[in-house]
Structures are given as structure tokens and as C-alpha cells.
Image (cartoon, rainbow, N blue to C red; front, side, top):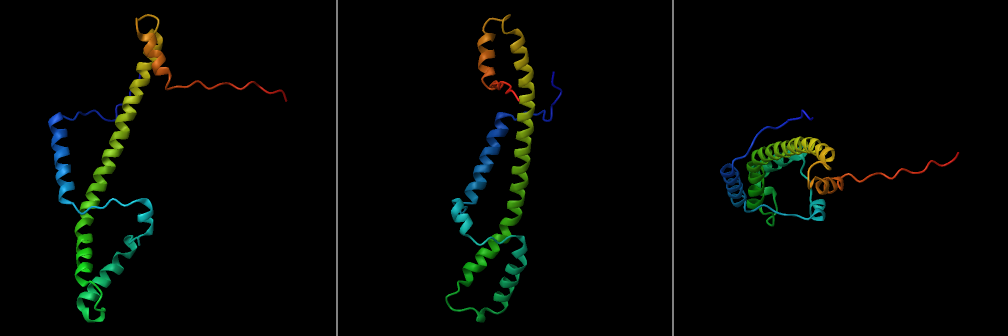
Length: 156
């Protein structure tokens, strides 16, 4: 019998509903979020953390010396982009942390369930001829474990 039990919790239906509602509210509040195709993402300049100081320097320079920019430069849009980037950073960090925690917890829960499932499968196989209907269940479960065909030994 398995002893693995990484997660022992439950989620009340009303709590699940509340979480989904709050996530929907967050999505609604962030109504400007984009969905970009992989080729679109590849075509964009990526301002990784190493470029943050450059963007900060550019922002402060253009604020202190707006006269250096050509008339076609959209100063207000640059300010909006800069400010939104700064405002979103802590939100992105929290959501990444939450997503990572959810993903790892889901992996652990599924591992717990699969470990227990293996115990159940062993019991089904052991009792397949003793309990009516278990033979069918055993066959259905066995489909998840295809047998390997042993190759005949070739003479040397």
C-alpha cells in the first residue's frame, strides 16, 4: 500500500466559486491584456531585467529633457507604457508565484491520486475473478499499461 500523501486538503464548492469570481474580476480589471501568437512574441523586442535600468534611464532623461525628442515621438504613450510596466510588475510577480504554487500542488495531488490508483489497480487485478464486474474494470484499467512485446533473442 502506498504511503504517499503530499497534499491532504479539500476545496469547498463555495470557496471554488468565490475564487473563480475573483479571478474573473481580476481579468476584467486587466481588460488590456493581449493574446499574442508565438511568432508575434518572437518578433518583439524583449526587455528582460537587464534592460530595466536602460528603460529607467531613458524615462528620466526624456522627462528631464523633453526638447531632445523629435515632434513625432509620442511622449505621453511612452510615459503610459513606462508607468504601466512599473505598475504591473508586482502583480505579475504575485500571479507567477500563485501559478507556480498551483501547478506544483496540482502535480503533487495528481501524484498522490496516481499512487493510490496503483494500489486500487493491484486490488482490482487480484480480485478480478472473485467480484462480479471487476474483470471488465481490470481490462479497462489494463489499457493504460500496454504490454511490451519481447523481441526474440537473435543468435550471435
